[in-house]
Image 1 (tube, rainbow, N blue to C red):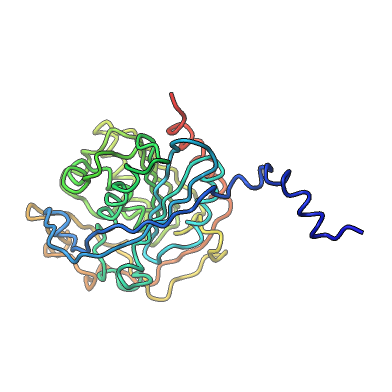
Image 2 (tube, rainbow, N blue to C red; image 1 turned 60 degrees about the vertical axis):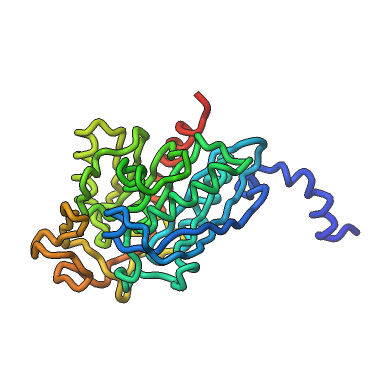
Length: 322
């Protein structure tokens, strides 16, 4: 009598060719890279006198040969969660490698949702550029087919990493992203020259009921980008809460205990690279009256499926050789 284990072992060579295993990377590497912890004003003014820190990123090389396309994944305020794992699988199954940045552990924190001032919101943009320095030189990476994809705080970083001014000052890799994908980013801040962006497509995925990072400011930003001639689109899902693509998220969604949201704030960068609260006309802080506590987060399987189809089609259109 043949045991179940023996049966599996005999079947494994054929199983290895099954489409079910396409989402498994052929190889995984962990890379460390130097970056800085700096304030938003330092980032905006180009001041690199910050605290030196070493972060890590996980490169999952998809099945395939030669130089492959890569998607850089930047998590949100809570660190690497279920949505990152979900998109790794989707992208790897397409033959797109992934580079997951951990912006928290190397800084000695696990998350900053309830204490957003702990880490300048623009730090992740610098981390993203520093990761490009690794990917640009990697023998299994096609430097012309690197996509930036971020979520929440990381979605904000993904979106604004497209700004020419920021790239000119901070991106020393010699390459630029082929496209930008931002999930439920915060668009409440207007930065100087923020519509002068890379001539690459930008796609934003958001939810109507999101009360962590509302969609309305992103709609306004998208209109400004379109007026400037940018290839940008915003996909809005009617029932999608913040974090809707996390398969481990609550369904129905639930309020966070103490996360801070700037949903009632309007912030702008002044000529001195200071972020100003438009109401008080002084420097914005997370002690301002406009900051709200306890926004709702959760999963929306229907929106996730729709976004998966849209992202898959978009990524394929970007990385497929013309």
